[in-house]
Length: 84
Image 1 (cartoon, rainbow, N blue to C red):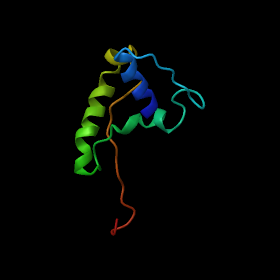
Image 2 (image 1 turned 120 degrees about the horizontal axis):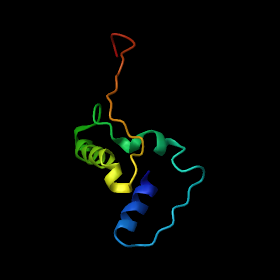
Image 3 (image 1 turned 90 degrees about the vertical axis):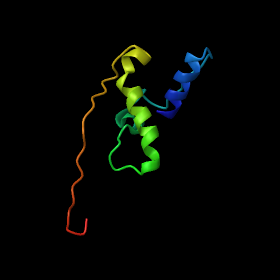
């Protein structure tokens, strides 16, 4: 996701870019975890960046012309013991 994001931002600023992928675009961890949009369970210092990521992902149609199949949802953390 870092390479794709950098390429997108450079292209938007008028630079010519080439994005090379090792495999199918978005087929590894960057393509399935939505780039750290998660806000719960993060250290406080990461929240501003996570909030910005959430705003960007929420406006994918405006940013790249397609919805990117981003669906906002929550997540659940489970404790396996009283100590957890």
